[in-house]
Amino acid sequence: MQSFRASLRVHVVAIAVLLCLTLAFVAIMSKEEPIVRFFFGFFSVAIVGVLLAVYRKETAIAESHVVGSGTVTEVKTGRRGGRNIEYRFVAFNGVQYEGESDWGAKPIGVGHSLLVLYKSLDPAVNLPLMRFLFYSFEAYGS
Image (cartoon, rainbow, N blue to C red; front, side):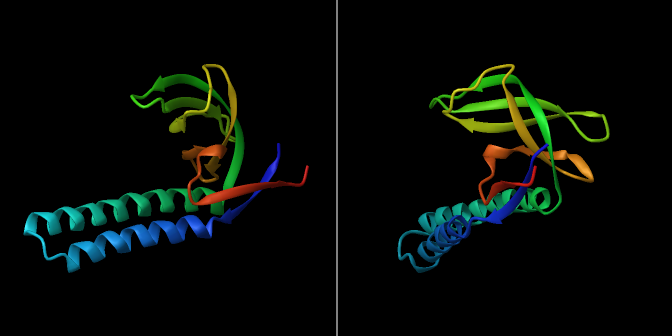
């Protein structure tokens, strides 16, 4: 099985921080009605929470990951053509795990194989290799 080296996508982190700061700035500096300020403030806090949760999960996997081969078990198509997939893989301990991820508009079907990265001590924390937001992976070794 291949080995992958994780590298942080600094530009994605910078864009996420700028987005959150912009929304917070508008909420604080707006002279509009309180409901507008509340909307931008709430939206800023919600985005920060989601981005932090995604970052923590991806970092946990990237720091100590194991690569496994998975199989797509179900594909769900969303309203805008995006796809959500369900997949399963067998971890190094021989136990079968399931996962779910967005897939975007790229074509994929039931039965397709994909590489899954999972946390070495907790294989239930996993993501397909192609679905990381904050990290990119480069193959090395044999």
